[in-house]
Amino acid sequence: MVEKLGTAPPPNSVLPRERKPMPFDYERFRERLFPALLAGDRRQARLVAANAREQGAKAEELVTHGYFPLLKELATLYRSDRVSMLAHHYATRILHNLLESSQLEFSAQEPNQRRILIFSGSASLEELQGLIAADILEAAGWDVRFGGGGIAADEVLQECGRQRPDVLLIFGANQQDAPSVRSIIDTVKTVGAHPNMKIVVGGGVFSRTQELTGVSLGEQIGAHAEINNPEDLVEGLETFYGEEAAVKVA
Image (cartoon, rainbow, N blue to C red; front, side, top):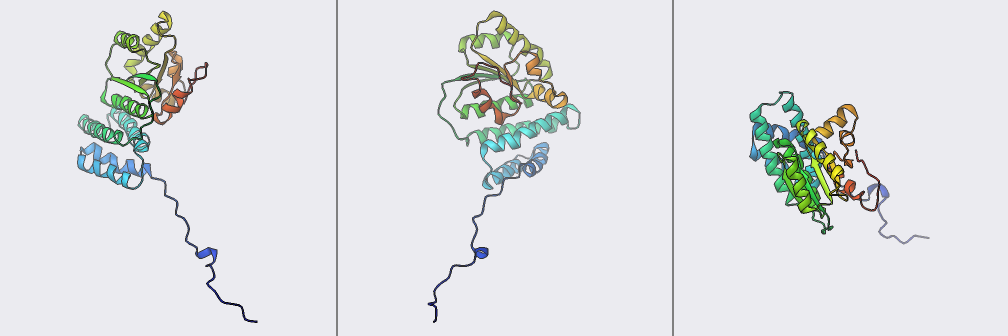
């Protein structure tokens, strides 16, 4: 008896497989971008960033996994005199431009009816860390006011009274700012004028202290939380709502 011939399916070994997208290599991205930053090569830096987007890197992840680690590395090199002032200025100004371009491509969420005031250290690298925090939280639906650095403690407190934020975030402060941050926290707790406002710190000197010693400087000075990674900010701040206990996010 002869079997009726037909078109048999190909064996499994030769079936076309669905190709999963390769994870973007952020380490390689940083290696390509850093020399352009130090050399002040704006065109090359923009090209590296544009190529990353074409290869599937999300704007938000480009900031948190690409630009933010470069900011930290640049700060470390500059503090140890391994990068000149000119290279430092080149890099910070290009990074500022790249951050603003990325922010325009963030996926914006619906407003969450919560307000946050954000301040940072006065140096350009610390202000860029604060800018990253502001951009991420604004895209997540927060009503953001970003004042940057160099603002006196009493003026910060006055603005808290005027804006009545849910959260005061000090992100990217330097070592010289730590006493001022502690003064703000002590005043808020002593006066009791903002009983529902959470005070959160992170980045800058807080991140360096955590990495070098394992000690939470934010906890020592009385902050409600210390959040050192920008990608953890949204989830970290959300833990305040519906919970009475203070939360620390490493």
